[in-house]
Length: 261
Image (cartoon, rainbow, N blue to C red):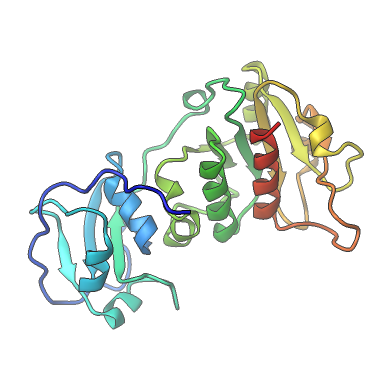
């Protein structure tokens, strides 16, 4: 669905010089690729940028212009292929930048009933986390919450799958997910865990107030202790022909249900 362009990048593009990149991200840096992920990062004032490698076509595809002193290097398609994961669809753009600053759970608990918080229990596939970020952006979720040890790091795969949402959906990493669910309850959130074996459907379990949507990893589902910290377990009413849904698809359906209740 086409929408109007966001605010343009500032300044004029600096001169692109020939040469190849290092082949791997610098220590502590994040490397993003693809037009939506790179453009969103360039427009994010909270993001500190180290270097952009771009083909001429890639640079022309960006909305707006870069500052004159932006660290920019001309590259060919083959050069960019050496900077990213194998067969990654970089679309002529690779950006190396600093990770986003850490957030605390208290920073995102606004209590708005229309803005759920998505809690992911050991969802480790970066494609799934990126897709969930994208759905969270589409349905106006306030944040996603993961455990720091059992979730993927910020990365190009997450950024590409999120299609820009990595830059504006807050991502909170916590040490103890059960404690985070207790904090959500104290803040007035109704915690609903998706579980295929639950008796109630998701629509039946939805309250009128703020919701924390809890999803577990594919296969294992939510851990027992996490499920015990939910106020309700609910299932999506899918056909018996399918045992389950991909976790990112389940998240999208549940977020739509919250947005349209």
